[in-house]
Structures are given as C-alpha cells and as structure tokens.
Image (cartoon, rainbow, N blue to C red; front, side, top):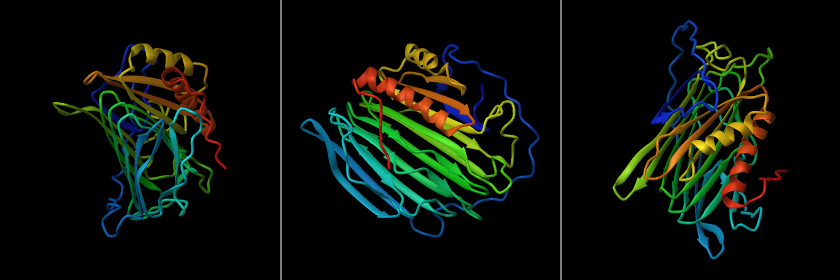
Length: 321
C-alpha cells in the first residue's frame, strides 16, 4: 500500500506483512509548478515557542518557557495521577498564511513526561508566492517521554505548507507522534485544491559514540503534479493519518498487535518498522480514510493501547473546549 503522493523513508524497511503492499502507479506529470520563496526569506518568524520540562518530585513541571508572536502555551494541567504534564499550544492568529514561519523548540529532561497538543486544527490558507512553514526541534533525555498529539492539519485551496520536525533522543526515550492531514473546503466542493503539503520527520538516536539516524520520514503531497486520489497514491481516499512511535519496546510483535487493533476500521492502514539502533527502534503507521473523525479514532486507539501497555494510563481525554 502506498499512502502518499510521494514519500520516502531512510533506514525504514517494511516488516513482515502486517498489511498489504500494493504496486505504485504514477500518472503523467504536468508542467513544473511555480517556484516558491522560503517562508523565512524576508521577515522574522511569525511565532516562536520554547518549552523545557523536567521532573520535580513525582511530577513533570516547566523548567523554561518562552513565547513570542503568534505562539504560546496555556497553563499546564495533569490529566491523571501519573505525573505527566499536558501543555496546549495556541496560535491566537488562528491560521498560517504565505511566508509565515513558526519555530517550536521542545526539550524533555531525563525521566520527565510531556503530553503536547494544540487548541484547535492547524489551518493553512492561500499562500501566494511563498509557502507557510513550521520548524520543530525536539530533544528527549534518558527515560524521557513525549506524546505529541496535535489536532488535524487542514490545507485549503492554493495552500502550500512545509513542516520539519527534528528529534534527537536517547535509547531509553519514548516518543509517540500523531498527525492527520485533511483537505480543506473549496468553492467547487472538490478535494485536493491545495498546492503542496510536505511533512519531514528526522529522528536520531544519541549514544555515547555519537548520534545515529534512526528514521527519515518524508511525506510530500502535490496535487497539481499528480492524480493523488488514484491507485498507488491515496487509493481513492482524501485524508491521511500518521503515527510515529520510537521506543526500546517497539518490535514486530507490537506492529502485529497494532495491525490487529486497526483491522476493524474502514481506513486503509499499513505499518513499517525501522532497523534497531542502540537498542531502540521505530514504528511508522500510515492510514487512509475519507473522515477526520475516523482517523482520529484509529490513531487514538493506538495511542491509548500504548499508554495502557507501557504506562498503565487510561484512555486519553483532552477535554478541549
């Protein structure tokens, strides 16, 4: 199964068949689209956010916070008695526009536990002449845990958006990242009216001998260039969900369990494993659907399974209002 218009993963290889793999078909490529200027070419970042959390006693608390412009976090709260702190990222501007650049820097110290989410969907509107961009740097210490659970990304007509997430973690760290990409409303009611969505995850493991690449996951959807809803691309679906898990407990048995967990859904799902690096490994799940709610339920069922299995926590309930 191919789940994107164009995707690549370095050091990521499919495990034994937990979901089918279909051949890839490419349609004729139209003329090259107009070049886009970098979002950071002519102006400072539209928003900056820095968040560092550390373990204090039995709870994770903020060790450093900084925000400027159109990014900030709400007051921390605790969803259960595990000590995991939850922060909600807010964009008061409500949307990303052309040439907007947002910078997010997150650090989770040794043994600390952070759940990071957003207040609402990330909306990308028309970006004539220059794409909108978010760059996120994440660092996880020994035994640190991060659950990154943003609301869906909605790309509207003539929108171009690029997101780069760089993660550096230790072999004992635990990372769970979810993402849902949704085409926004257009006047003619057709999907895939945006220009480009590019999501790039660069994940490295830090050891005593240096830093080694675990996974390079590059998702690129360009509707003007490809028949993205067709065979070998989105397979007739319009919405894409992704789940990235890195943890020393990731293995083929876990991939098989997650495959069984998602088998009852109408979404089309595939799972791949990375090779192990320094005793840890990664898992990448891709799922296709025509419904944001269905993808959210599917990804949430997987994350709830991991929360229960690894941390003894109940289902995630963010109770956003």
